[in-house]
Every structure is written in structure tokens, then in C-alpha cells.
Image (cartoon, rainbow, N blue to C red; front, side, top):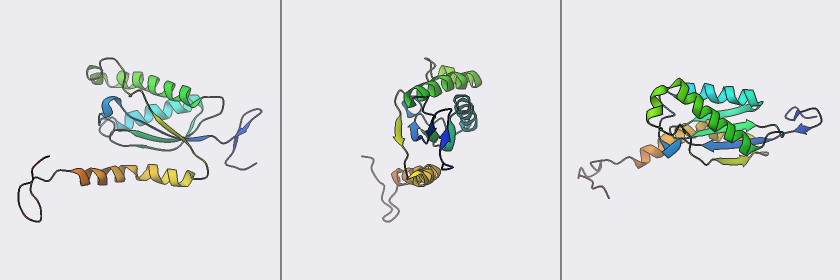
Length: 157
């Protein structure tokens, strides 16, 4: 048996998924003072479900997870539990967010999931570097009031 495989009583499995989800309205709240707390909540909920986090990263407006989910759990059921329970836990820890998110729903409804096969290393690297890639993309999209080459004022289109 390969060491990458895991087992239950009658099952040997290797189920890895790349999951991405975002807060409601893609608000850029994750990256600031709440990043550590949200990370702790997600780790705690994954541990309770028996889900192993292989790689994780919180960008400003979304979260990347590379997880190993046992076959006894469905991916959609796991995500539903994770997002639902983490919303309640986030609002309990940070009462001031209740007023911004009046309906107590912190996460948006959808999510992205992809199975991980032999490209696990590339996905781990992608998740690790996602914050830097987002920062570079933000720098490219920043509006400059003055053209650095001509000195003329740029107009917003």
C-alpha cells in the first residue's frame, strides 16, 4: 500500500480536492484582522469532520483549500457544513460583523471544486503563491492619475 493512500475499515482511498470559496459579495474582509481567526475556525471544523488540510491560503476575497476528504463524506455536504458552521462561529467571535451581514450568512452560495490527481504538487504551489499572484494582478490594474512617461493626466474610462 502506498503511503499516500489512507484507509477506513474496508476502504483504501486517496480523495484530494482543490476547493475555492468566497465571502458574500466578495468582500475583502478575510485578509485583514480576521484572517487568523477564520483560519482557526476552518481548521477546527475540518478536524471535526476528519478532513485533512494539505494546503490552505486565504486571499483578500477568497479561500483556497487543498483537502483530503474521506469517501464517507460527500464534497457538497462537507462544504455546506464548513461554510454554514464557520459563518455562525465567525459571527459569534466577531459580533461587529453581524451588522454588516444581517442575515448571518458570511459566505456566498457557490464554490469551486476540482479533483486532484497526479498534479498535487502544482496545485500546492499554486495555492502557496496565490497571494503574490493576486497582489501582482492588483498592481497591474491600479489606476495611475498621471502617465509616468508623459506626465499628462490620465482620464478614467
